[in-house]
Image (cartoon, rainbow, N blue to C red):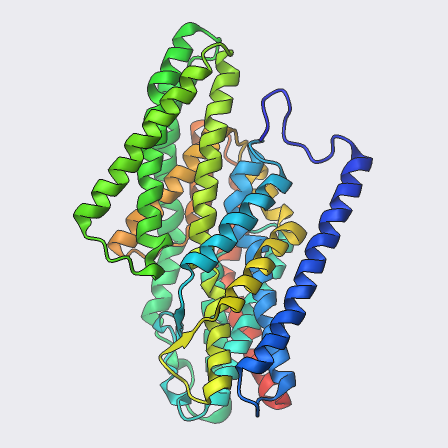
Amino acid sequence: METPSTPARDDANPRDDRHADRWWHVTFAGLLAISLVAFTLWSFGWVSAETNRVLLITAVVFGIFMAFNIGGNDVANSFGTSVGSGTLTMKQALVIAAVFEVSGAVLAGGSVTDTVRSGIVDLSVVSQRPEDFVFIMMSALLGAAAWLFIATRMGWPVSTTHSIVGGIVGGAVAMGISTGLGGFEMVQWSEIGQIAASWVISPLLGGAVAFGVFWLIKRLILVHQDDSAEGMRALRRWGPVFAAVGAVVLSGMLLLKGLKNLHLEMSTAVTVVLVVMIGVAVWLVVQVFATSLRKKKFTKASFTLFAWMQVFTASAFAFSHGANDIANAVGPFAAVLDVLRTDVVGEEAVVPLPILLTFGVALVAGLWFIGRRVVTTVGKKLTEIHPASGFAAELAAASVVMLASMLGLPVSSTHILIGAVLGVGLVNRAANWGLMRPIGLAWIVTLPAAAGIGAVGYLALSAIF
């Protein structure tokens, strides 16, 4: 983690950094290659002996490619504020992502997954034709991954959930039309309407909450920029309060969303008591930490305190993301393996541990290899981010995610965080609205683009296999 006097830079010594980057490139390329080979060999023994090996290898490549691109876009989006604020370097973000994303996937990623995501498409017509279901899910992975790769290369943060939904819609409609079993009537258009609503609801909610949180932080703490004793008193008084509120929100988000696959089945009273205890404990710890900074200048002390608070919000986001959004790759792929193993389209598919581990590695590799442009967009180009504003954006996003989970609102965590970043930019009067034009267009294009690629993918797979 960095201090104001040593801003987060990966190019302080170009020669050393190039050497270090080569080491990281080789390390993650090697891990990805080993994971791909080992997982492919494992999958040979998992599926039916009669399974077409070329089809299986193709499915494995599509699934890992999807996880790789989730890392490059969604995970990069999550860590953009931390890297952009100077709290973390790209390599430090990578380490945190490796620990918490993979932990979230393995510990809370779920042992089973729905084979038909979100009821977007009526796939009952393929129950007697398992091979069609396999082709639809494979084409969905290809369509979503290809669009995510394009968006990531352009630096556009987009929704991975909307991408995989688009891929499924495209593959299913192509199947229905080509086989005469259905067509556009297979799509639940009311669900698509909810996705369209999230383009507006998500960023507005994220922006409004972030504006309020950061306005309070500036009003109560950051208004003191003269390194005065009054500023330090404000930091010791209000810093622990914001940390405690953040702890309550983050722990609530984890219990409602991040750990939902564990089915803890805690009562509302137990949940409330638990999050309150966590909040009080964090308040005490941060109170002690803030007091230990009393000999530092206010500007440096406030940077340090909010930087550490931002590390914890980023870690919680990473765990929740690993537990939930990796399902956008794991769900369709596990469904493919389940059909290849049983030759039956079931309601749920088992998710073996090797899938979660392998896809977790691909997730982190994607962040390292292609995630920098999205990190730059979120952390630098939309607005100038500092630890306090980054903490406010992440806390606001977590609050909206938790609220939406409780109310069942159709939201996208990606769109919420982008709105939150713009919200703190509004407080500073430094939001880059011009950049939102291509990003907003990318949000609208995501579903049809993934659907188009998915449709072509289905036609190609059905012709080849």
